[in-house]
Image (cartoon, rainbow, N blue to C red; front, side, top):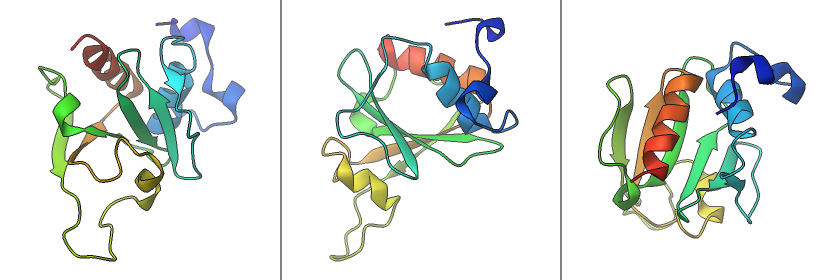
Length: 134
């Protein structure tokens, strides 16, 4: 990971107090994490991990960043300050029940997902590294 001296969220037009923006700016310096071929949306930044896993990070998130991933791809351990909850496909036809932008990612659209909340960009990067090493 690049040291904080080598990157600045303001270079990306983001608010430096925004956990999600800071995390996404740091990801830009990790060449092994690529933008998803489906691209990103107004509400989600979508990524492919080196092991082929798909992740989405919500663009909003001043105090925490929200990361979406398939539950079956979860890492073997979670850091103490990271929280996760399961999100099941909505059983009622015609409703989605979670961030509808996830539907554009075939790997996530109809899967049981984990919604992970990280309190800082540093804990987000540590979490992503644990996903890469799982």
